[in-house]
Length: 112
Length: 112
Image 1 (tube, rainbow over the protein chains, first blue to last red):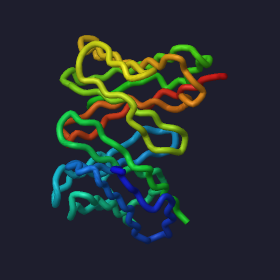
Image 2: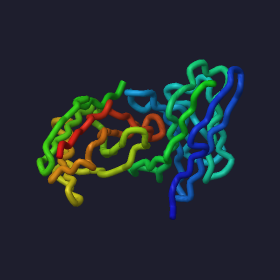
Image 3: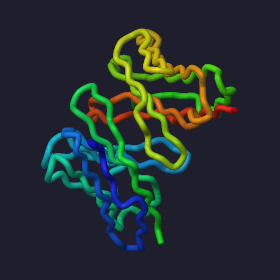
């Protein structure tokens, strides 16, 4: 079955630690996105990538980094510079143009 | 700043009734509109998309678009308790790689 796989489902970060969230898709989508959702709030864009080896900052990129070395994969690293990382992280992908985005199941990140 | 506005609810309807969810958007140039359903603790799931003025029906769901009024709505007929969720209206921003601008979501509760 085609879909978007995010792992791990739950992640705990210690102070000063970088952690990496995985996102893999087998839908042959060109565009991939990372959103953050805080309790009771809307989704905010962290980074996006429209093609391999290229990505752009979204609205809240500070403290995060990404890479896009393969079409299928768009990992997100939450660095120690992100002082409030506790949130629900959602990866999405889509074809270009007026096509809807599809979401993975998400990763919940908490601070130990 | 492009915006999408939704009534946060909660909207409560009895089982079997029609639930009406509304959304307005600020960018008159918007061309595509998406409705997502998000159960508590889960990721958003695409349930409808609409590009043209008028109605689009899919099973118990009908999306209605009025570009002149910058208004899009979602009707759920024969509402079921399993429809209880938060419904998110989203519009792509093509100045930022097609990122989705989400409304705050409307919480729907269907009472048996």
